[in-house]
Image (spheres, rainbow, N blue to C red):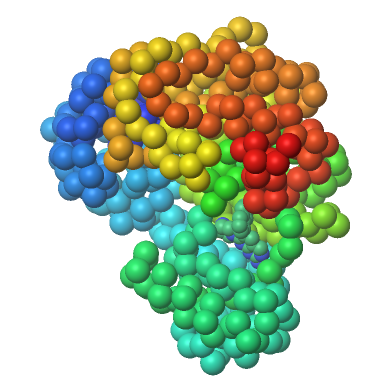
Length: 453
Ligand code: MV4
């Protein structure tokens, strides 16, 4: 059994994990940078260890310091949260070598899925639909151009170690190919220290649909339905909802079965997410698998009633899944919106600073996951997300009404936030109709910031 968990993260997800541990009777250790000595996770954990200066590289990304803190405090497990070291196979491997339980899949699974080109081949072999594309790694422009021509334009050139949009370029035609390829490859080298590329046909105006998976160490795998994350800007999601307004019960079943095949093919253990692109005609394709708990996990928790962080801990301590597929019932509609310290009017420029007045809404069907408090100084070094506002209601229409009501109550003084911008999204006819794709923000940003009325 796990008795003490070190949380290798900060902000609201660190607080979320501390809460799950407390309810389970597990002791908690926070790690924090010098910029975070007044952070909520530092205050709430049973113990807290300073692991270095403000820049992530020297603190939250510093494996040796985090492992030392684990040893010194006698924690038996590390929960990595999301971002930082959560999908770093080297870190998971170091944990394994030190006899520390990494709360997530094994290091080899993380490494295999982290290579998106390899993941694609694994999924194709398991009859999970993949986007028509290259089968072998590509290193040279000339080989790439030949393969692109055989796939058919437009194509998208991606870094094998990429994800989240880095090292990715679209080429509309043969003309554009070499420039796009070289730019993407250069970016890949800079970001991942690796020039391996792959190419896919470029899917136009798809939705981003992802399935939540839970898998234990005994071969049991279940899915908890989907999240629709099509509302995003520069690969940062703004709104996530469950279920997706675009899925019929039949399509959900089909995609859910594909997600299960995907997780099984990867020999997956713990909580994970299968990302799909969904075309308007109903065709869907595997994009990548995320091996971490995700920011948007609360919407799945609310429509299923399952506590995903507790399940992660149970799975990591060798327990069997608490649920079988037939126990999973989706009920009602949940929507999450990410509240960021940023100014949408100034091209979403981050707005760190001191939170003066603070009022966050509550009431039936409203959940706030946040780590800010009145008087808290938001440091400039990390992500700008300061709160997640999650609502639940019987159906999408009522959930949207509740979200607008809740957003209307939010008071965060002292910094700029995207609260008003979010409110406008929930008023926009395209969002209300549910007929949106990943270009929603790009298409309507000028209306949402009030430039066009
Ligand atoms: C694509 C695509 C269209 N066609 N692949 C974005 C990040 C990385 N996970 C892969 N991404 C995409 N891959 C093909 N073949 C469009 C995107 C994409 C995207 C996907 C989901 C959500 C938002 C997005 C924004 C821009 C591009």
